[in-house]
Length: 181
Image (cartoon, rainbow, N blue to C red):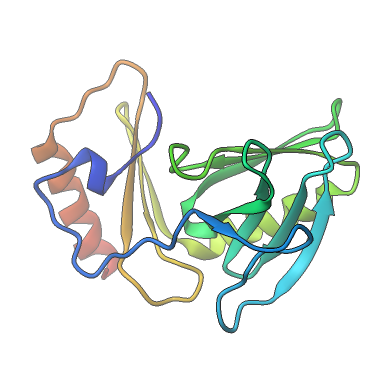
């Protein structure tokens, strides 16, 4: 079972003021349209597909290979579950919390290790709290890199675990009180 946001997992709890940036935007072939104040920190190109990837302080942007190089996905760092490196393949994998709108990214490039370091730093910067739910999985509170916006609660049940909505809501309430969120 994949990660679930509180919005998908607990439909009875309404997230006030939460608006999603479009996950697919158009830009030029060379670079994505960045939000006002957003600036590129680094860019890479996939050695196999030639897909461009641009990382900013707020998000990672990458070309959509299915729609052509003028279409770009935008994945906020708070929407990234994790970043992994496969040294044998020289491959970076960015795992999306919302793969239906912004699919996982696989980048094959020897220079992608720098991007891995940036991705891990940005993931940590957008994670307010990460709580193991033994033996039921984990729960995390995430906020956009800008620091504004609603807290997104992410629940990742362990295989076979099926916590109820009431159990998850109680855990979130407890974590909110303990962490001051």
